[in-house]
Length: 440
Image (cartoon, rainbow, N blue to C red; front, top):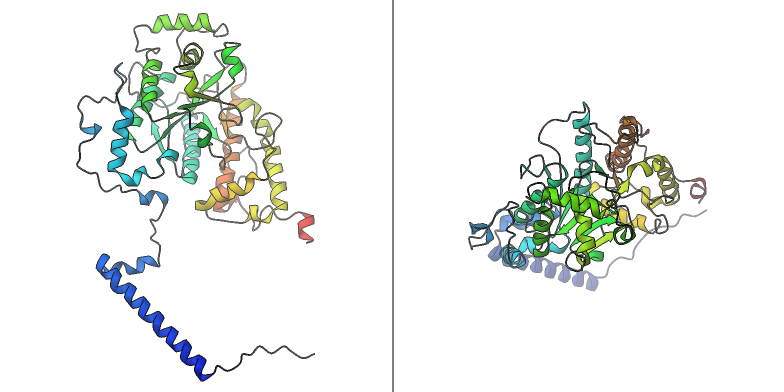
């Protein structure tokens, strides 16, 4: 059998001259670019056109090294970071002016999120409570790093009278002032964790709203239940409406002289509320119910995905969910391709076509977005007596390892057993093709 010979026809003198002319023209063009560049930037910077710096990231586009000297709200001695029954006026205009002076932060501001979480100032009473809180915080840091969000962990009472579940309101107010570049402030209780590291909050859905919370409208307006929403996880827009809402919400808290009266009002309004104190969740639902036009109409009660997923209904499904995802990966080579963590979002988008009918609520098999260990009290250990403490701690271990597997995969490792934190290295092309693909 003869071999195919790869050869080309010798170039003619005329074609060689033509190629030579093109080469000279290209060299001259490059020299002209260099000359022009030298007038606008030092020539020593020219190599940066062809090489990326180690610090290149979306965050590096922000000009963090310059704060113009023009007067802003920060120079106003009347502006207070505290909850003092004197809400800031004209906050939208003040924030807009700051962004105008800091244009690198203004670009893309509509999608910028600051996630807040925190715990008490003192060590946990539960002997392994601090470890659990650390792991829950790591989970949030992982999620924010993957999606480019800022995060702040607070362990100080910014208002000594507003502790426990009320402590978040002073923090949110102060954060709005400290971060005018953030459009949304996202509060998450310390015992809530991300269990779908790919999913992103659909901010476009909330373009006409200023507050997003997980709940059920029928429980608010028909049943009048104090558990109609969960106030442990919500997003609030950084705007004047929110400043005024936080002031009204805070007036129902323990720093208010009307605190005791509010406790009575809330208990008489919500018949299933068993304790007498005014709490943040009942107060929030009260404002939704009683002042719907002023506050409720600007709040989005979300239940199409698990912005708050009740842990007891989640942890028992995690192994089956893992199995369903691996089955899809075995059939789809692109989904199991190894990649840098920095481009994880692009793979999250690839997954969406396979998850359209999955659903993340009971009966569904999509990863629940957030799993909230309500009633477990990992720091104090004083869990709800309706379930055992081992159920809480075992459930947290499983959920944290489930989420961590989605992160560790980009580092080449996995928790093979969700019941403990040990890891093993992943083989190439994990979990491998199924038989039908292998035969292709």
